[in-house]
Length: 174
Image (cartoon, rainbow, N blue to C red):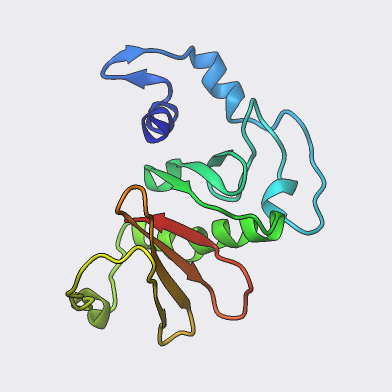
């Protein structure tokens, strides 16, 4: 549902040819309405629109603890993330910076991945599901990865930490 709402905003309030949000509302929604001052988190110093922050790329719908719907018209994309960034604003800035530094370039026209990244795969793990175990690893760039089971859903949560940080900029449930 979050992604669908983001797509509606990306598509200027039109869904399947029908206007669902007024044009004027869409225009004003995307314009800075309130100036903000932020010394520690550059994204939050760019201003506030109608229920959305302004951003260096598009604009995010920003929920608690790093819940985002990023509307990025420059690459015609909506990026939805449900993180657990409990370390505060710096943690949330790290999440956005990872998207801007790594995902945004990959979405741009003419992006060419490095040949070694094209064929990179993760080997299959065999065995039984054990809700008391987790897997940890360190990637070549120093990123720290932890995969832990969710007991109730039999899904896996993957946490990734950038080198040199003490928090988890991204968490995904697999």
